[in-house]
Picture 1 (tube, rainbow, N blue to C red):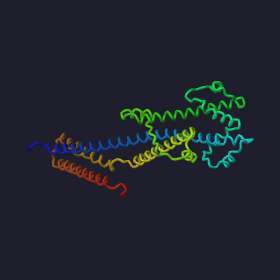
Picture 2: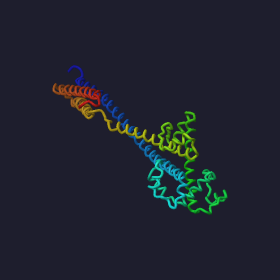
Picture 3: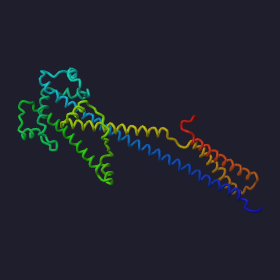
Picture 4: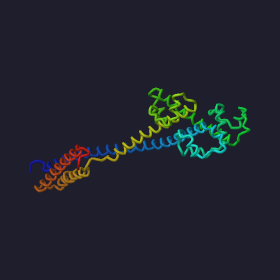
Length: 336
């Protein structure tokens, strides 16, 4: 026999091996890339969900602080009226008297249940002497009374002490929020190369101060006639609450977008058919020719079987590629 009798089997095996390597490598790389993309989307969603939970907790606390400040302002405004009452009126009667105040009913009910005429007088006393309370320096109630030579003989000592510490706690929270605002302004004014570090320290907080939804009609009136110290603090609490709500809205939108992407995420269609075609080529166009060479089967039937298996594999592979391209080019909303 002239020439190498193995050339046909060798050519089929080498050609098939090259095709399987190229196409198989492409499919593997595509699948790995898509898996990495899906993992990235999942991680982004997890991070945003964690941030969203933290923001909702902050929003709840900010709402509590803001509404409590509004209730305190309401009680301060009607102190003289309540002091003239023999007994504190029911809450429903009180709200009928002052219908213009837009207050959270649960917080108002909670604070009103704590209120009594003696507590009201004690609270009013502390508010009158609030300029003598320094929230940056902790002072015991007894020491504060002695230092400022205050006459508390006509008040209930326990209630007065409770109101003193309640006022201090509220002022400390407000002071902490003012410090946070200063830190935020410092971060924004810092050079670009430092902003990233400061931003990490602030847990990626980026307040959007321009998105403010008025929450109380009283504040709008105060803006026209000038703000007192308490009004400014209430407005800061309102701005903080609005900022948190806007951040929550943006994060919820981003989470919904990620959910949409994850729900529509898919791998290349009919991927199993592609793997089946490559498996066919590997078995009938690589292993079979090698087996024929090993057994030195150079008969016409063996050659015909090897050639037919190779042609079928090539036709199947190109059919799959064409079908895959056609499917991927089809619009997502197309039927079928």
